[in-house]
Length: 313
Image 1 (cartoon, rainbow, N blue to C red):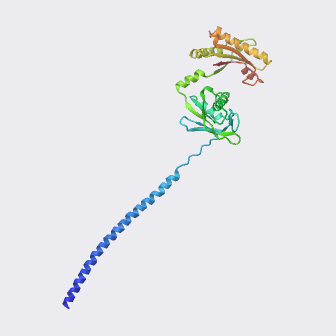
Image 2 (image 1 turned 180 degrees about the horizontal axis):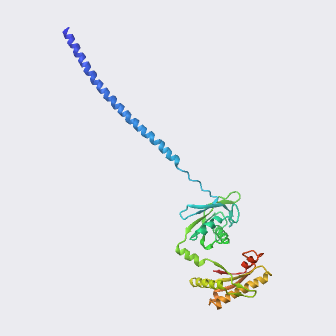
Image 3 (image 1 turned 90 degrees about the vertical axis):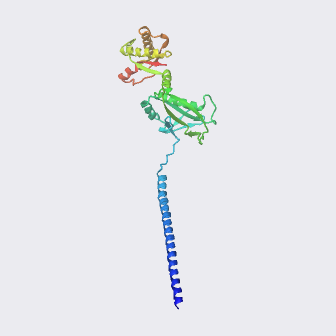
């Protein structure tokens, strides 16, 4: 009985030791599992925190508006659009350009821009298609020349305008019309281009000498302009001047033409004989009453129309 009791106590002792060991190991493993679980949960939280931020950034990127190719775009040297004019189109095999809406004020924003930026030139990019009529110069160049003439009518110096014709495939609609084939690029003028433009530019100047019925009298205005003209001739030895006489509409058109020519010839005579100008560089012409700049129905208007115009070429 005593032996059995000893054996039983030993069994109980070993059982307790084993239980404590196993409990300690399980607790450690359980703690490790919990720690791993916390780490994984932390990583999950980090990932979940990043995802909505990325989505928010993507959603905030603004979409660039589509460029409307029906408009006439005016861009700077880098290609950035400065401003745009209303729609413009061409007709297949036609060297004209058509504006919508069609009105005489179409180029007004561009004219205003040029008046504030007198140190730039404009390159007209004019596209044409190989399917159009073959001609020399090509039809792209002709469309650009058409625009230059339109600008000249508005008082823009044509020498600050040049044409770059570009051949590409153009899709014409059922009316043989196409948009997006014309654009303007504005470039600053360097010193070399300035001199080139100045040497080619046509200069116009209106002068009002004292007029009598039969002759002109050289007043201070004419004397002052003769000094300007002399300086211009000295710096531009190849230039010449047209002296054009203009009148009001009092009397017949034939008489006014003759009167305008007489005034122009007298101004020429004065410049040659009194101011010493080379006669080969001065030419007297007349437009009579045909080109008024004011209303002939008023005394002031008629006075403004009776004038001498110098065209320097």
